[in-house]
Each structure stands twice: as structure tokens, then as C-alpha cells.
Length: 126
Image (cartoon, rainbow, N blue to C red; front, side):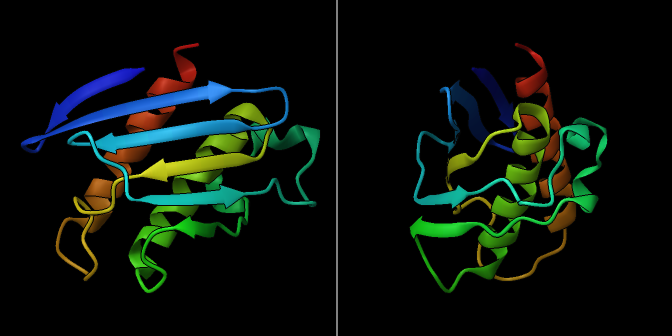
């Protein structure tokens, strides 16, 4: 588990790897309110670890959370791509959406890039 304080918030990045999937939790200030399932795309090959996230197309399916929040679905897709590239398994992703908000805002891209950097650090630590 990776624990980081950033931008006045407390983040915990945690993953549990099972034989057939990865469960990834991103707690923001101790909470998670959205859960997605993400399958490994059929086009994904064993050379996937050489792929960049922008080459991989995933379709997160929201299981729990706000179905009208498109911003969190994009964030879920990007985080899931990182997990799939590192672990080569389907993902169950749970995360807190409140820090990201619903509406477009300045700094959204920087927040996403920061989170992806932390996810990569967490996945690379094991």
C-alpha cells in the first residue's frame, strides 16, 4: 500500500492480486464511492507490457456510483489501463470521486497525471 498526503488530502493506493484479477483501491480521505469492473481487451497480447496506456482501449463498467459522472469514468479508464499493462489481468477498481469533482475544472489533467504517477509507483513497488 502506498500512502501519500497531497493537495490537502490523504490518499491510499492499494492493490490485491488474485489468480484471475486485480482489485485496486484508491482511497481519498478514507473514502471510496465508485466501483468499476474492467476486462482485458481481446486485442491485448502478451506484448502488452510494451504498450503505452494511450494504445490500450478499455471500457470500464460502473457497478456502484454515479452513472452520470463521465469524468470519473475517464479517470477509471486511465487508472485501469495502467493496472492492466502492469498486471495483465482484469481489474476491479474502487475509488473516491469527490476530489475529482463532476465538472471540468482547471487542473483536472494535472490531478489525473499525479494519480497515474502514484498508481505506477504502487504497482512497481512489488
